[in-house]
Amino acid sequence: MTRRALIILFSASALVTISLGIRQGMGLFLGPISLDMGTGREVFSFAIAVQNLLWGLSSPMFGMMADRIGGWKVASLGGLLYAIGLLIMTGLVTPSGMIIGNFMVGLGLGSAGMAVALGAVSRSVPDAKRPLALGLVTSLGSFGQFALVPITQVLILDFGWQAAMMVMSMIAASMIAIGLGLRGAESSTAAVAEASLGKTIGHAFKSRDYILLTFGFFVCGLHLVFITTHLPVYLRDNAIDPGIASWALSLVGLFNIAGALFFGWIGGVTSKKVPLALIYLARTIIIAAFISAPVSGTSALIFGAAMGFFWLGTIPLTSGLIVTFFGPRYLATLYGFVFLSHQVGSFMGAWLGGRLYDTLGNYDIMWGINLIAGLVAFFLHIIIRERPIPMTAKPA
Image: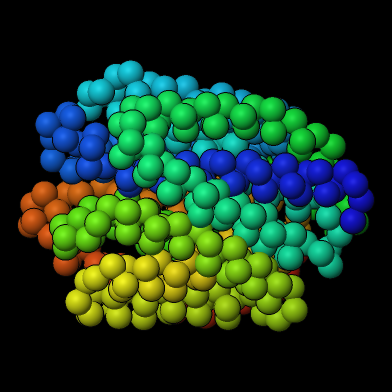
């Protein structure tokens, strides 16, 4: 791997580390912000849901921009948008302020997040090393969750949530400079799609297997954002110390480092769809075990570690399947559309969790929805046909 490719790899990893690290700690703000605003949990849950929806809606747009004008420009813009969004929430402590701030953060995540980072890396590394490189970006990105979530919790407890969010804003602003490291991302493979971007998109949405992948990724978003947003308050409702919640989320990030590397590696040596389907089945089993047993600090930490191993292993496998279908040229765009489905699921996980809690006073039905969705995702991925889809072929 060339020196330029290594710079792009580690710059992409740093972007994901910061963007996801800050994002995964947003659930820690749910309690104190809701208290300061004098609202139920649905208001800030809805704001986070808006963030996730905008993240998804903007990802294809920013992916297309990155494929055309360069990922480094798009990523640097994303760092600016992200920082501004956090500042707005810090200074405007109202429902509208939370929605506007999360709107900006969503745009920042779409432009400085996974789609642009993976697209740059995919075009910069050799075919044989691509699955592991995509897993490495995801894995190193998980370090942000492990490192930033406990820091966020300490800042909230010691200095208040506004000071904590101000610090996160300054960290987000560093992505403006980090984005420059993506300059020079070019494809290193001859298997670059010759078709136009528009034709490739149209072809993708006629493909049965791409559509199955897109629908399946909805469940990934539902799982992840429901847990990161509502697990801290779920544990608090069960008289678990807030520090345990932050460490549970940190363990998700720590164990995801190993999981993302493992699934990135396994996707390069065997089928991608089978381990992807098994991730959703494993999540379903882990959630079922967690909600069936008495809630304790120990069970919360075990849950975080177990879920962490299967947390973002979906990303190298999902993006790898897209490359298998259509090649690496337009990965940022095609992954962006799949990720939009993920973020619709994220919207539902954040908002519906808050809505059902405010209506029923518990999360029982929402946990059940997560279980059913995990089984559906398992079956959707098992029936995917893992093969290239030539542009000249008629998609099925």
